[in-house]
Image (cartoon, rainbow, N blue to C red; front, side, top):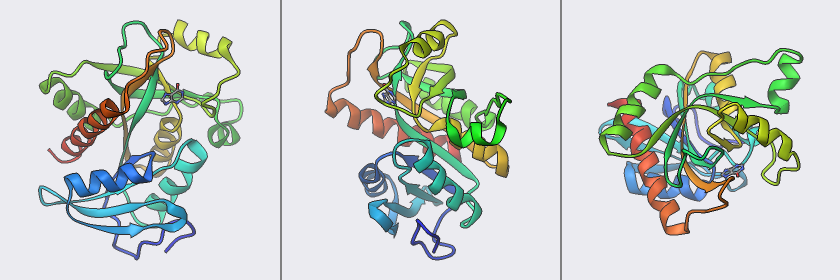
Length: 234
Ligand code: HPA
């Protein structure tokens, strides 16, 4: 047990999928894993361990935002030995060429966030995705005929953003989309020598203000789980 995770030693797999929402973690574990067992429910955050095609996997919620993801990813890596962490989540598109439901594989993520700025201070550290995971995820998504974009994203600390000027600069510099967790996940993976990837689908568009209906969010989520599992093990 750690401060925020109730799992016993050995109950967390080396490969962890991290959706933001704990109930999505439960849904994905029940839908995709064989013999899923709930290994965490501290503070309502849910984690499940089971197998997929014979491979042990944990699906554990991250919560929303980098401070929340940071707590879980730190404990999963340092206390439970997680080595491959894949975020599956939604994002808001920032470019015209990116459409609703498109898949985004983030090569890197820019951020103003305090978990990073507190460490790096004046240095603009550029956290990166694991190339092997990204490469496999790209081929899986491409094989399914999904529209995919690979490039830089923005991990914001706020959903209700008061800095439209900053979004404009992101758009001008080709940032594909905004979400709230990947930069911290990639930074922790760099620090502890783990593999990390963010597989995202576009749930809303900052330029057109379109948004996915909730049924489509469920099917996009299901696609992301499959891409993540195949990227981790195929
Ligand atoms: N902002 C931040 N995070 C998000 C968004 C957004 O517009 N859409 C999905 N995740």
